Length: 196
Image 1 (spheres, rainbow, N blue to C red):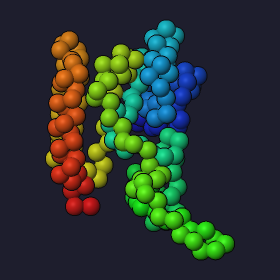
Image 2 (image 1 turned 120 degrees about the vertical axis):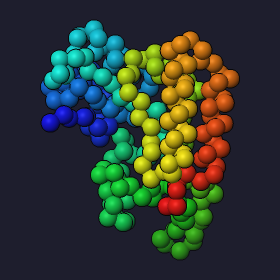
Image 3 (image 1 turned 180 degrees about the vertical axis):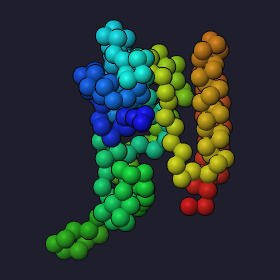
């Protein structure tokens, strides 16, 4: 059975890649890594000739677009605790994307938080630096689509496909990146949850 190593295993260095190469050909790196760290891992795979079960070099996958989890590598238990929907099994109800009040337990004083997403980091969008991301050596880009409308998924994947193709045929530019971002923003603003 083919195994695909998830971000939940916290792959953050070459030693971990080397260990899991016994089991899988593709590994998703932790979301918390910088471009420099991603490049060091990809370069190390080539330098040390780290291969998976297929006999091919390990391929690295990274998150390129979508919501980022507030927890390290998506290991959040809020949804499981409050709704019995495990984020670690793909059923996150995104508790972090709700409005909250802070209540002083001693005197009951309530403070409503102005920031709508107090626990949630800003969404990830790498299309305006996709060239730098691809130059690290990653082979697979992960685009969040679970729970999104078909129109949203279609538009986002089209924009990233066009950006990747543009990078490889040397026509990528900041102007094009801004146009792709505008297309994605338009579909986002129309409501991407598809009735959820």
